[in-house]
Length: 99
Image (cartoon, rainbow, N blue to C red; front, side, top):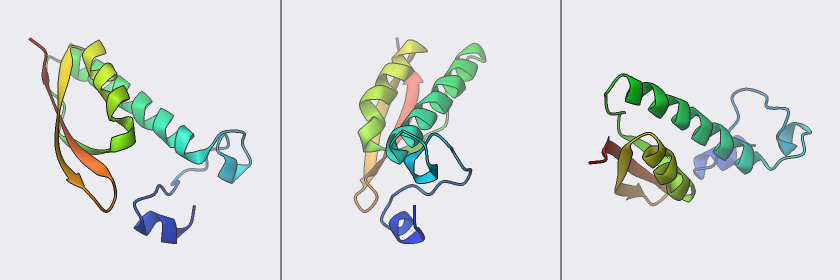
């Protein structure tokens, strides 16, 4: 992706991911980024749950929020959605323990 797209709230790959179309792979770049983002979050929540702690608040792409909610529930958390950065489409997400 170009730097111009990055300014519009898009993703810019920092490591060549050969599965992405932009690097000759069969999968859409956004799908690869979404999968990697959700996979990383799943692993983080798995670790924080074992450590009995709550993950830090972060901005996430709004398109991922339904999946993020399911990932959080799988590890015993619920999410709270906060402010949206309208320009990028990313939203604040906070985690807390599900009671």
